[in-house]
Image 1 (tube, helix red, strand yellow):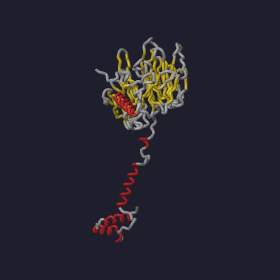
Image 2: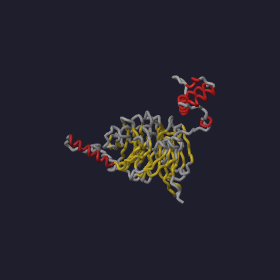
Image 3: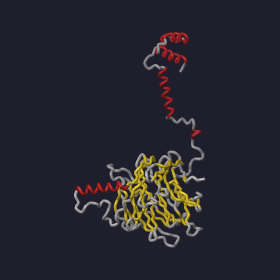
Image 4: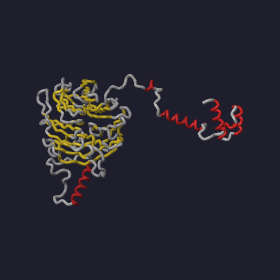
Length: 446
């Protein structure tokens, strides 16, 4: 813009705002024609220039100019650690102390590694790679010396803690999201849940040899939606084994017999009075360590996770007296309605705690929970990097642990007792998408 054009714009401003004396003096001093202050449609004015400047300044806020790339560009030491996918705190046999056992920390990552840490020192014992052709999503320890691992490809493997694989099977076609195991003197039962809509049940006999094999499944359960969580329990009547299964888009706990048939014994609704088609999915379940009739349920409710503490209503093993079979012998429409209402009331009374944890999550989150080993509370994960401790009796948020990066997902939790000599401490282990594996311990009392 030339000086004469700038002077004409100033003259237009003075005339538009009736600064007549100032305009006459400005025209004489600037040597402009007497008509310099007149404005026609489309002429440039100071107001238009200021409006364009405001628009330009606003556009800079949404534009990456590259002027600060040196300060915020890709640094030389970028993150190379993979997301934590699964953690557990198993007890394994001590190879140097006879019948004694020692705690370990087993963690799996998205780069197909399985890391074994000694506790309480938290030192890395082994970092095992390529046990599977895809990342490991769940682990379990068999007889305190064999490691069971399941992967995203649907493969199940048994190995020792040094990574020597004894046998592999691929009975699932998609992710094996959870392994559940129950050991007894008579038999060891293993259940796997896969995102192919299947739950497989195995009976494993571990011989005296050091090379155990994985047998074919003795029973398979086909579900209309993907299974989410598994839990073995003992029947309160005769200590027979029962498998609890939860699945996506269903608010029920499904009870199955643990045998070659694996037939459905009954189900328990966790939202008996809900009028919504789908209220939530029971995404994670855990049995109370001090009361085998209580189970904690982490749900898929959004925008915040809801936690339930539920008394189990285990159906009869004969299958005839299921939870719904409280209808009189001579059924009428009225008696069926009364029976359904009575069942809903029983199921509602079994829900001891139904609370909001304030743990943010989305439809793509993976809820996780872990009981405190003394049974007084439950830890839950979140998508904001915090771990919240919920009191089991009241449902109140008592503690909030902040160690992961704010806004990052806490993927998995595991809690238990860790012994160091004669001392026993409560530990909580958390793994997150910020590539951190954090051990939470009580503060030492001076």
